[in-house]
Image 1 (cartoon, rainbow, N blue to C red):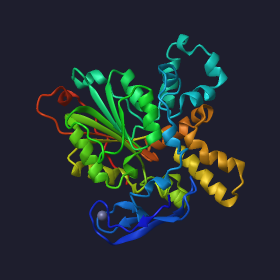
Image 2: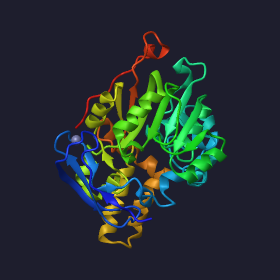
Image 3: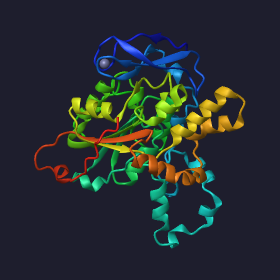
Image 4: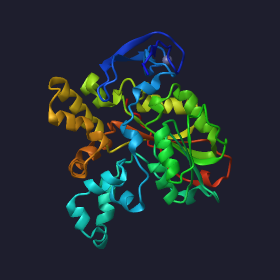
Length: 364
Ligand SMILES: [Zn+2]
């Protein structure tokens, strides 16, 4: 399939005039072309323009596209590498010898410390019993092969997923998960049926984030919660690395958000209590270093290793980088954001009684 591009007006406000933000080839998967992200002069939204037509967009995703490879994991391996997006085989293999032989569970508090250090907060797993619902139901848009859905299931959620990739969706079904191949346009999902909806690193890929977020709003019961994650184009990373920032990820990322722009969009879609969490995650930085290095020396083995690192993180380096990840999240400069919001609820539902801290001071 040949990739075709089309000029569009701002996908959020419909206005035409924009200014160039970044121009870059495909740094990660080698799709031919030079691609651009622009900023709308009216509403400030940053989006890819021209962008892939919906008919040919599959040409941007190779068969071995990293995020499609995440497999459902056993409970044991999920505990071994909390918050990781690695498949089972990777997780076992990358678990260093000192963790394989160290009887972590016999040392009080050590396992919890280890899990806390490595929890980058990228995929929040809420507690099912706190919904007050008899059959707490969760939905995931873009569930790939079902790794996160199986985590939810282990926590007591009844899960349902939608995934556009045929191969990962089939893998998820083979693991016994209720997953349909398609998108929210093509698949019918019951409305007001879910206590929780998640969509990790997906909203930046869809044609209209406003339509997708509004669709997710409708799937939620009143009082239900939404959790999403996106790269943070408002962080220092994007300015520092310029066109080598790996989360521009052109031509796959059609939208680029800052904490402020995403919060505004969620409020416009009807959500309330928007909580912005800066992930403890430096994968963008490592990938961007790889892009910068391979641009100078295409054969650099270190460059290639750094470039692929975000798709196969090593535990020893993740542990080594803990001070950096905590520091950047503390100063609210995380390169990836997890955002939690709520569909306004009916009065006196159990969800209303949940008190939460709103950490919404935008940094951009
Ligand atoms: Zn606009």
